[in-house]
Length: 286
Image (cartoon, rainbow, N blue to C red; front, top):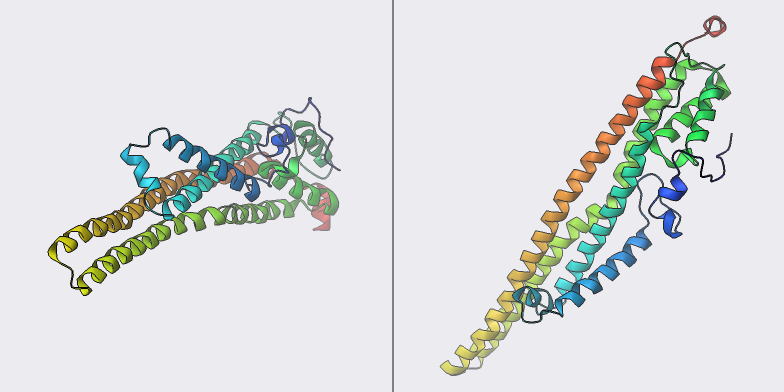
């Protein structure tokens, strides 16, 4: 059986609800995000951020991001990139959760899932959503039922569902790889800014002392030293605050996605595994 064509009759449409697919970009599978799209969104957000700062040039907050060298620009860009990834993943996870609201088996308590009734369940899935393989829950069920349909082994369904659940968890973890890398890189950028600031401050002050300058010149050079220290510590502060905020948001989203996968496993056990029955002829074959 192949996925049905897009239709307004579907109760759940991935093609019309996926945030990336809605704007004409092939959406990443499950909760994966398109790196190119998030890069563009991050660039636009960075430009907008600095554009807003130009409206308040005398604000101390503005000086933190515009007068501390190039490092703050990189920190802001990576922060915006992370936020874009998190925002799109959140919307994708929201769409994935909607699948849990639909029942793929008849409401009849006496319904038995077997090789004779598997086609009925498959039809209900393809009537519910336009592209089941793009949704974690329905994709897991379709794979298990397709095996039941082709091989006729009811006893394999539970094992396949478990195996697919492990694979879904692995895919979920890899979808966060880029995000984790950026969260790690942001504090490193802050420390690089610290090193550069301290290097400029100490190097400038050392050259003044080495030249045998008068006390007035030494006093004047202290202004350059304090400016270098401002670059050193402010960039670290910006990076640590950004990394802290992103780590908190990332942790909550990651936890929410883990809970969703647990809900999918529970759904499959309740609606698929508990409805399985071995028919008499299958017992003889076993």
